Image (cartoon, rainbow, N blue to C red; front, side, top):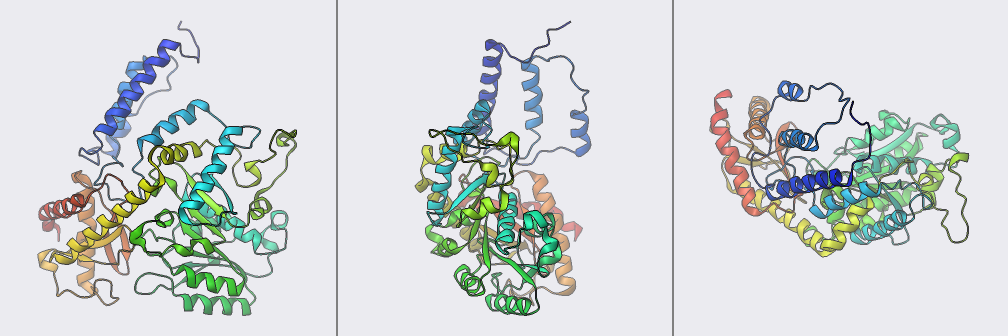
Length: 499
């Protein structure tokens, strides 16, 4: 019978550690190699992972071999032609920090539980505030991602919207039907948060957008006034600092004016675009982030950190404690004068918390904030280069402006080309023509993904199905934009028979 133990010997730890490091180094060396997407089926992967619960230890070399086989069947999210979603490209400094954070295994619930990790998180929050121009006196915390940061931000806005103790009494005690005002292009996390908070998705009031996909501020002001007159309970406005469909930046200054006048909380979803505030090509469009009452950020997007890490910043720090503080005898902080009584569980929804701040600390220390700004600005430059190539072609059509690093467009097969019109006008592409283009581009996107040379995702722009290229990868260059269009043309040539 084998010896049952959980402690690896020093030699086993070294063997496993060196094998894991060697694999990671090789993976980063080959990040730019195709295919981006593996040639694997769900059935084949299920067969590969069909294994009974291991009762006895397996050789470390066998375990690493199995891992390498499985890892080869994942998507290469760090590849320079990975244009799908708002996907972290992951810097190696962050990877190293995650390894060290796992080795430390700090539970960052409070200063008492993790003194140095708590101090680092407070420091990192200060750095993030400085990067986006947020109020230096504000506070915040790190969470799993932008969706959870938006959830926490809406929870704070809800609690701040009333003097009623809804922590105790619940949302049924609100004096009228709740209302959360969002852009019609808001992220799915906002209605999801409304549902989880017990407000219901019916509380979401989508405000129309203008032709540039930015919130219509006049419509917002009118709706707020009408709802207040009707006895509704106004919770907050959620504005986009980079909508994930098109990259649209809502007119934040004008929205802040409306919120200030109406006495309504302003939450800005900056999960995608917030960290671009210092990029020269943004040209001050995100300067009004400082006026938000709360702001979500996603360092595992445009700070190039490995997943997962999101951030919520709140201008009035006491609002966090008002929303989340919950006492329990087994977590009472007992401290002397040399200790801090600070506890993250009183300022956010989580109790157990990973040392997420370490990866941000490492990235900013190893590379510097200036390098981050340059990389973000270069990403925006690549997106604008891609837009220019599309506009200059006769076989592609752009479907939205490009304020940040998302480009929405479609391929035009020869049989379906019409005279070029304003690419995002409401009347562009109607009826059977639009349906045929949608069908073709939907099939084309899947084939481009399967091809493995480049990877696209999709968006819905009005009635049009759009191919969506999002550039949030410090490895992506202008040549990759041209390469993407050539790949689409090549794949379209073999897909055209399906139209």
